[in-house]
Length: 261
Image 1 (spheres, rainbow, N blue to C red):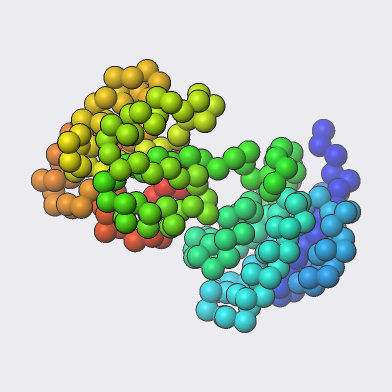
Image 2: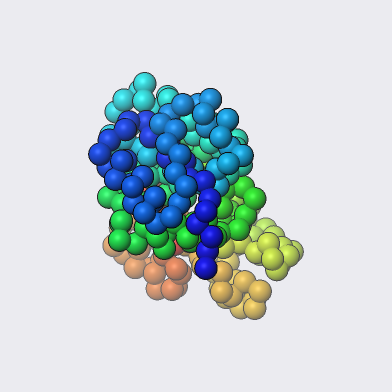
């Protein structure tokens, strides 16, 4: 049985009835609770006795510059403690907040409203996770981006580098060579493959990948600049794991990737 005699600190930027109810529920479950509110000194001072920080984020915080800046300070402080952090917030805020506060990507995210009935199992899972950094995952997922347009490729890497490890190659054969040289325990989790490239195009690369045992099972998502019905139909006839229009916004791309890996 998991030992619940650990310190859990609730960091609330705005104390409310919901936060009070969360504290009581955790105490009833047997956790040692410390309410810090949003005191930066207290976060640092109590780090030794805390196993998990729960950061309760106010609704619509994106619309309040002062609160957003303060949340940034709190998040950076929490990240530096090296302890597990669970951020509690609205679903719509998760991706938006990472635009302003990269540290949010390091925290376990729990959507509001909190599922109080299953809170015990949620807490046990988070506290049982291994990892020296944030307890969310052992290492970031790895994406190989294959595109002959280096400007576009670098832009996409900037968009998603806070959450994924991104490698870039600018030609089809470079992708094959790269993947065959990668160690088994370092293999990529997803390939974003430009459909139209000179010399060796996307469909040819996909065919070669499927013929190699080492790469046959890596998910491949085509990048295409043509969103017409006929063009999409041609792309999907090759049976990739999906496709993304190059005109897709940053936020929509991130949401798409979160569903894929």
